[in-house]
Amino acid sequence: MQTSRTNIHISIRDQRLTLKEGGLPIGSYPVSTSRFGVGTEEGSMKTPTGRFRVAKKIGEGLPSDTVFQSRAPLQPGDPLPPTEDLVMSRILWLDGLDEHNANTRDRFIYIHGTKHEDKIGIPDSHGCVRMRNTDVVELFALVDEGVPVIIEE
Image (cartoon, rainbow, N blue to C red; front, side, top):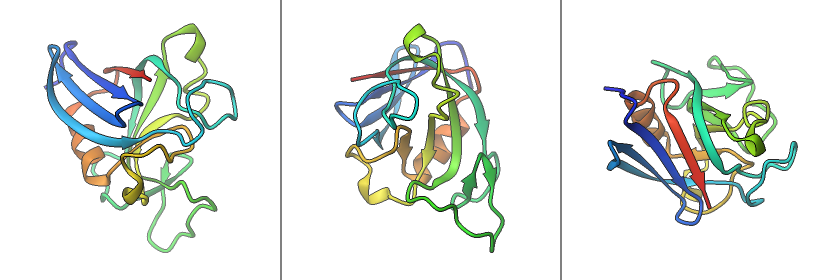
């Protein structure tokens, strides 16, 4: 299904991710970007803006309630990571394509699922773009690695 005409557009103002094909919306999902605002500084926990691509997709075929630690799925019975910001379901790891956001991959900025689905629609993350687990599983199936992503305020 993936063509070079598919892209992901994220509006921080609207807290919404739109999947587009040939410029036309084919899917729209509420998201949660950083509670700390917009920025690219290392350690800032802010959501970067600009042009990106999906560098790596992680979680193919796993249950939608899978929790990841350092991008590895935890097994049933494993202790949960010591964070409130669990990475769940699927990971779309972003790579910054602009000079100002070139550190995005090293900052581990993802589009991912969350246990905080009640906070979707308001800025609450630690820099990543959180989605409802069912939504990120759906998006994951619709895009390939390399798909362009735009994040704008």
